[in-house]
Image (tube, rainbow over all chains, first blue to last red):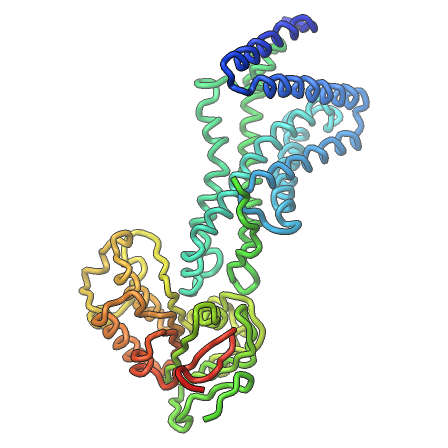
Length: 268
Length: 220
């Protein structure tokens, strides 16, 4: 089976659906019609742009170009993690903790998968490396931002209890134990949920895309299982790293809780 | 006795000091201000008062090493920063004004507390099976004292330990603290706004303002 190529006319027909929703919004005075059209235009422009970037990259499959794009993706993901925090670590730590833990987890797991599991030649072949890293970063970013947000929120809520434990002579690890466990759990929950319902409630996007593009379903499934496991590994490592780094930063060398290292909560 | 916020406040009767360790604070600068120097001798109680924001709680927090500070704090010959923070906090027990509780039952917190102490505070042994979530604020306050004492600290920092209690229970708390202090010859630093309580329990009643000792309460 070969891929059926989509023409501009095909996409135009799909765009009519968006237009219809925008008209409906205007009739019902929902006030989101304009935003819907702008969002649709953005989606088209952004995806076309990334398509062009990938096309160029695939034509020049050199390590430094792949590494450059990977770094841009990482920096944007780090920015996104920061934006999702209610209480951020002040200074460079706010950006650094999330970015460093994603660098460690996503890059390690992606490189491991490329070299040991998939084995393309060369190992950084962009057709494999970039989508794989994208999937890993996207999901690890969720885990890391959920874990960090939970850590800082919870430690603020339970500061009296954490300090109460310190006053009884507990170490920072004992005093923060339950908070850290909660933070880890919330970082891991999305991927556990996704793995639990994959194929039953939802068909994962990557697998659907591969099948639509003409891949045999069993091949698509194998790739999807691989991706799920890699994401679970990456998210676990990334969340653990971020929660560990964050916990270290919450205390000083005398095991004092230093909440002034967190910013005031973002207005919601 | 002379008083100087710079050179320190000596608790009187130095000739009767028990061979336990004094709590010494020398030239302390902390979040509320400073400098502050103070010595609380073994077996003696210094009460502190002062307006809200004068630095009473912050002083206790600095002594317990919960907040960053400059200056010297020691218990006898043991400097605060010469031992691990955990070891220091086990020796210098601080009872915060609002006690924090976690977990299911009282037993998780109080294992090892002598039953005689429970009786002094008006509890029976059955209190061990009480659920934390069902404790009243007064019960929490009394049990928090027990929890701290059960770890056998050598010095006590008490932040309004009877603030939420009725007169009967206040008396019980004072009684237990006095008994513990006698048995250990522990120096005690006690924040209270109640002059009659200070008169009952303390050898000195000092006033704090802007993080500095400004003299005895009610005088200069």
